[in-house]
Image: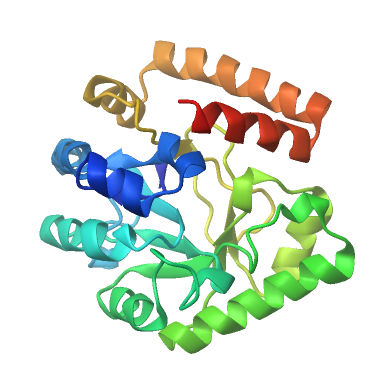
Length: 257
């Protein structure tokens, strides 16, 4: 079983956090100090390596969502230092347009360095809220934009907000994605070439202590049971409130954090 970690933005200090990361994204921002500690912990685990043949079944895989500039200027140097390859799922409309997000040149440099660049939608809207034509257009156009930017085939993606329905999974596969990621909690048995079920990932937050991180990558049973219950409660609340009301509640809580 593998553990797939989900990161978003990183930051150097409180000034950097306030300047470069939006209030609603800060609960999922990780300091560069903590990220460095986490990478040191990973030295004892097999990870996605820059030489894939060295590890065909990694214990831990790193992923990043959205395409924040810190993926390039903070995460990339440390990943290269540790010899770890990660997947970066990028919202294509943010490229070259949104402040503090990666541009085309940076994404190509990341791909050239051995990182995987994948899709994260075109607009960052929830796929489960879209009609069929709209969803398919997002899958196809975001894929092309990323392929043009990196010069490489893009066949992996993650769903923004972890929101999707069964139809979206079928659409993604038909649009050429061979591997898709969600945000369900839990370790996974990775299957190559399958797009049937979105791969679970465990989100790293600003509140994730190094002890909790060790429990995550070490697959501590008590920790996983406790967090699975929490995740199930959140999923139930999303169903009751719906995407828009739940996200509005999340934004309010994040901005008052």
